[in-house]
Length: 383
Image 1 (cartoon, helix red, strand yellow):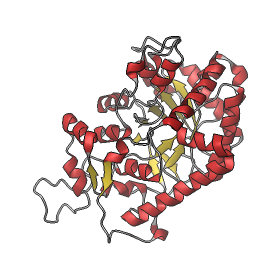
Image 2: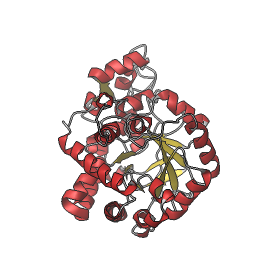
Image 3: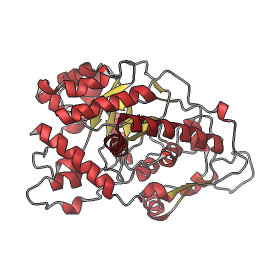
C-alpha cells in the first residue's frame, strides 16, 4: 500500500508539472536594474550559511520519494546527481522505512551513492524520537527535515486527522535528535505565525515550501474514490508570499515550491531565503533525460546563478537582500493585507546616510539576514 502510494505520488506530481501553466507569484517580483552595479565574476561566491551549516551552493535537491523499488531507483539517480554537482539532497518521507525496514535500501542509497555529500533525512511530525534517530542513522544524515502537511493529510484517504500533537512532538525531536532540525511544508506555505511558533520549539531552520509547485492536496484528492476535495486546490500561500511574511523572524528560512529556473532562485534569495530547493522540476528532467541531463541542468543553474549575482553586484547569495525589488499584482495585495511595507524593498540599495525618501529604513531592513555569507565546506559541522 505504502509503496504503491509512493509510486502514485511520483506519477501524479509529474502529470501536474507537465500541465502547469508556468505562472506563479515569483513572476510578481522583479529587480530594479542598476546598470553600473555589476562586479567581476571572480569575486562571486555561491556559498551560504545558516543554523551552523555551511553549503558551497544555495541550491538543493528537496524531498521527493523512497519506499518502493521504482522510487529507490529514482533516489539512486538523484544521489548521483547530487554527488556530481555538489548540491545537498533530502530524502522523501521515511515513514515507509520506519513501518517496513525491508525498504531501507530505497533510502540508504542516498548516502551510499553520495558518501561525502550533505544528506537530509525526512520524517513526519508524529514520528517518535527513537524513530527520528533511526531515520537519521540510516542515512548518516547531516540534518533532519520534519514535514508538516495538514492540507495533504485532510483529503488523503488514510491520512492523519489528529494535529494537536504535532507542535509539541516537533519540539521533542528538535531537542533530542542530535542534528539540526529543519521543518518544511509540502507546498502550502509557512506563515509568519507558524515560523514564530517553530522558533519557540527550538527548530534551527524552516523551509517555507509554498504554493506554486506540486499540489499534494490535489494529488491526494485524485486518489480518493470520489474526488470530493477539489475545492482545496491551490490552498495556502505562495513561496514568495511566505518569504515576504517572514520578515523579522529570527529562524533562518529556506525556500521551495514553484521554483522553475535560476531567476526564481535569485528572487527567493533576494527575499531572504538562505537556500532554495527544487523537487518536481529536477524529477521531470531526471525521468525525461536521465542522470546526465539532471547533472547538466543543475550545473547550468549554478553557473547562471553566479552570472546573475555578478550582474547585480552580489558577491554572495546573502548580499542579494540589498538588491532593490518591486512587488506587483496579487502579491502586493497580500503584502498590503498582512501589513508588509513593500516600498522598503524598492530602496534597499540606497545607503541610510544618503538623501532619499523620508520613510527609507536602510539597506536590508527586515527583509533578510544582511550580507556576509561565508565560503565553507559542502558539509555542515554538525554531522
